[in-house]
Amino acid sequence: MAIQDWITRLDKIELASLSAPELEATLAELRACFSSVDVPVTDLNEIFGLCAMHKNPWIRRTGLAIADRHAETPSARELMCWLVHDPEDFVCFEAVRLCDRHRVAESIKELLPIIGLPSGRVDHVGRDGPCDRSQGYYIAIWNHG
Image 1 (spheres, rainbow, N blue to C red):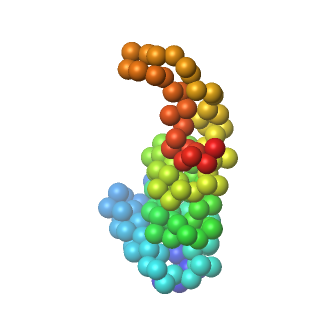
Image 2: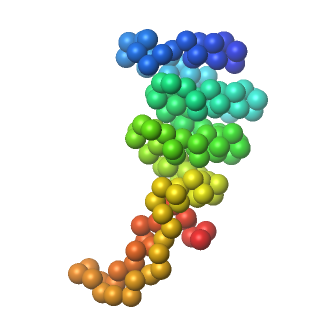
């Protein structure tokens, strides 16, 4: 299916327009079509842009599944960073997970406003030993900061 056909098809999907089996079949077909390594980058750019702004969160989540296969492309990394702010938990948590998996350094500026800056290390001993408040930020900064 050509990229324009996918764009037209996905544009017509509303939040409740398809039954669950129909939506899952469409999403599986979408994943299969764009997960191939030989998809042109221009087509990926188009599909990632469409998925990023789609009303249906399952299509946004499917865009992340495709981005996982093409994480070396700038548009895939941009989609991961963009969807870190998605209002649906299952979408934004997946975006954060993929940013971690692929070490998307660009996501740090997106994640820090959400989790805050790590404060300095705390030099006191708690119940389980020395306390280090910055450990919780490791997933976001991967020793870059």
